[in-house]
Image 1: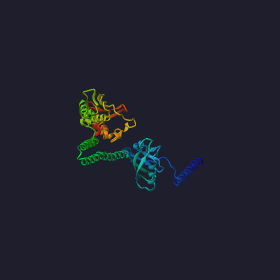
Image 2: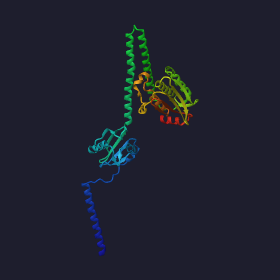
Image 3: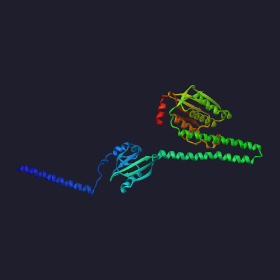
Image 4: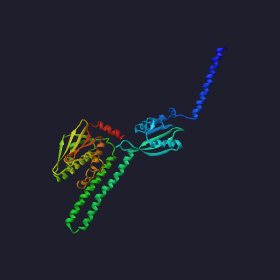
Length: 385
């Protein structure tokens, strides 16, 4: 072997030995003083599972960096720049990493001013020695529904108590005034008024409960608009005549819409009843129909007290009244407009209102009109399925 070859071999051997020493030193250093490196790979199958989860899911490594987040988690705002954006959730992940215990808690996510908070349930569990999995479910809608249900029960109890209590007091008054025919007649008239109010309230509660339990219409029928409007006017004619209010049927005639005949009749009847109740004596209430390309607009216009702009967004809430002091004199239950809203929703339609205080209001119920193969029927069947 030549001297040159020997020199090259010795040089190569020295390089290999030197590299080995350096590598061993670096391994020793990394074990003694570990440093955060790039995110490591997820366990096999985890990414595939997260991609099909409907709930929000996060996988967090030892440095609290989010290795993987499902699309719902990103949409919910749980992740920001590969870090957990919710402090309570981040604390829960760190606790699980320390002791390896599965934890579950409710978290309130505060949002922008004026935006309601989001209520979520978080379940956090260790995925490996360094990885932690967090599953988050949005419970905001359930909270809202539960709150509405509680309010509904409380409001129903309160509303039923009022006429029932009045009837009881009036019956006692009738007994005490047995020898006074005029007093008996006066108290009996008031009892009749309160019993009618109670009957109307119970009927509207039943109607509203039925509407809320109904599925979207999957077999709408042809409904003659003229017949519905005439029925609503006839039902409210006595109350209108008592206040010298003129009921006018206006707009186009011979229109047909698709839907549930009874529900539409109840909705228009409630709109006309409200217009009569809140209009001054000698005024006019106009009920009209106007066709669109695929819809029919049914409008009820009055010359009543109007609705303050700050109240318009709330008038379709159950039991909500713009002027609570007037509901006793008008006999209102606060459920009529809520029923109208549910009828519109079950038909795939809409209801809107224009109003100016002191000038009057116009409520417009928009419902579908077309052949039985219209888009409405398709939407209703899809919603039902």
